[in-house]
Structure formats: C-alpha cells, structure tokens
Length: 307
Ligand SMILES: [Zn+2]
Ligand SMILES: [Zn+2]
Image (tube, rainbow, N blue to C red; front, side, top):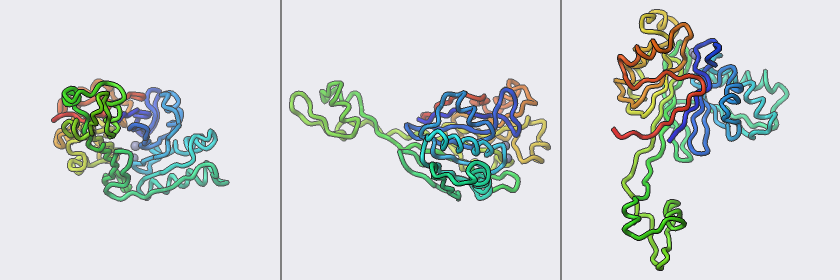
C-alpha cells in the first residue's frame, strides 16, 4: 500500500487554495517527494507530514513551478539536521536547475551537513529496494526532458487464516514469528514453517505519477493497469488549442488515457483556478467515472485492486 499526500495541486502560479506541484508518496518507512514547487516546505508543515526520512526527491521536469521549493526545503533539512543525505533524481534539465538552486542559492559555501547526490534519469527502473521498484518513463512536455514515475510494490504472500487455524497456531508470538518468515514452535512442541501456512500470492499496488505533458496518448503503455494514476489536467476540453500551445493536457485527454490504459482510479492535479472544480470533475467523469480532483492536503491510499 502506498499513501499519497498532495502538497501542491495548482498550475504554474500558486493561488490561495492551491500550492505548486508537489506530492509525497509513502510506503512503510520510505518516502519519495515527487516535485517540489515553491512553498512545498510550508505545505509540508501545514500537512503535518514532517521532514524526517525525506531523502529521495524525484523531479518530473525542471520548470520552476516544479522545482523552486527545493532551495528552502534543502536549506531547512540541513539547518534542522533532519537527515544527512538527499538523492535527487531527474532529467538533465531538472538536475541542472536543482544544482543551481543547491549550489548557487542555498549552499553557496558548501553543505557539509547534507550530502546531495544528483542522479540522471533514463527510461527504466532506477531504484529497487524496501519492497518497491521505481521506474521512469519519458513524457513529452515542450522541449524538456521530462519523466513520469511508476511505483510498483513487490508481490507478497500473506499467511492464510484457515491454514493457521487448522494447524492449531495460536494468536500471539507463534503467528508473529510466522509473519516475519520464521518457524514457530507451538505450545505442544510442534514446529510450523511459514510455507505450511502461506496463502495465495497477492500482487502489490501500482501507482503512476505524471507531471506536465501535452501527449497523453503516448503514455498508455507506461501506465497500463495501475491502481491509481495521478496526472495533470490543466485545461478544460473546450480550451484544447490553448492547452496544446502551452504543452498541457485537457481534462478529456487525461480521462481518455485513464480509460485506454485500464487504470483503477484517476486523480487529476495541476489545476488552474480559472475553472470551477465541480465542472472539471463532471467533465472528467463523462469520460472516466473513477476520477477525483486533488486538493492540497488530500491523502489517497493506493492499494492493489482486484480486476
Ligand atoms: Zn507545471
Ligand atoms: Zn512544465
């Protein structure tokens, strides 16, 4: 299970209701910050998500509304000794922007307390640890080298309650040992191994996050079958010419992608305050009923859904 916290859901310029692009993906003790628009630090404080264990930042692209908050976030991590490393993953342009913010703005005299590493992305898996694979896929948006991100939780095989009961495994330490993958010794002296009481394998949750893009059709394979797709929808469908001119999607583009790719649920972000969110939602649901519009501080659980 992943949990998403939306920290900024606005498009290009912050409004009273919406900060700029940023969301936090959490899985167990692992945290990934996707984009870090201006004001992300303040949004994190307002959302009470804290700064501890925040050491992985994924950048969809280098436009300022997605990266400017890195300067204050990194400065505060160092100031408050909230970690000793920061791994920033992004395309070439995004990393160059991050490097300027780090080295020219926040830490012109160096940052001995925070080890910042820049990881250039290319398509494919770039991180596989703690039960989660994270992959990047290319995204078209103006002339940037943009990427979207796919988070895939490892399949797991939980204990089967019926098998535990019929083997006579009592609640408490014996079941806890089996859940940790260790053999358990029962009060009557028998030893039960985990393989004797495992249930059917279950697939893990899958989540795709896309930043700005003008070409939803090209993403169908990359996001196929995910449980949740988070993607921009900056313009209403009637404003398609403007959307294309500015390198963005319409609501219909995003919803049509969700349908074509068979995703479980669609969450639209990068919202402009020129529109009424209820009208945007109604429009999206005409094409894909399982749609919601993200608001700042919304939390969304991503679980593997049976299909
Ligand atoms: Zn943007
Ligand atoms: Zn952009």
